Image (cartoon, rainbow, N blue to C red; front, side, top):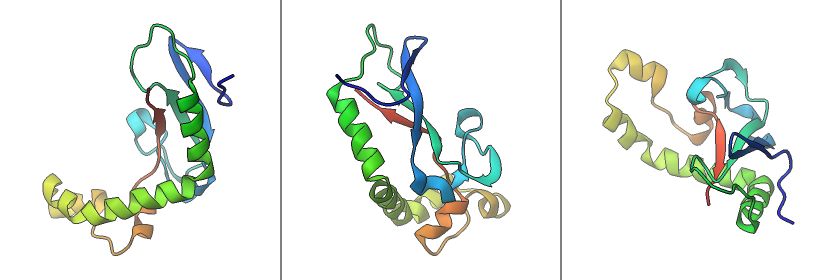
Length: 131
């Protein structure tokens, strides 16, 4: 049987919570649309959606979803570090692309020297395990 803990069918969507302790030192992004909820660090509990935001006639958890969930919970530190490494490599380009004025840039996309500084700038809001 294909099971992921704490997943429920809610309005034709499979939704629940996932615990990822490695993300506790990042911002809490559980506000509306993934916005900053509080200035406290994350509590390591995040929303999870199976199938993403696609409309499904018969929402089911597949073996692929279970495998993705298990990989993520087992390797969350490696996944996070991979994301941060890639983000750091692209960050200067993103700053240029977004083009914030100096005051906004200092608050929204300040210059950083290492990946650890992302912990004060970003956080995890929701995980989508797509079909």
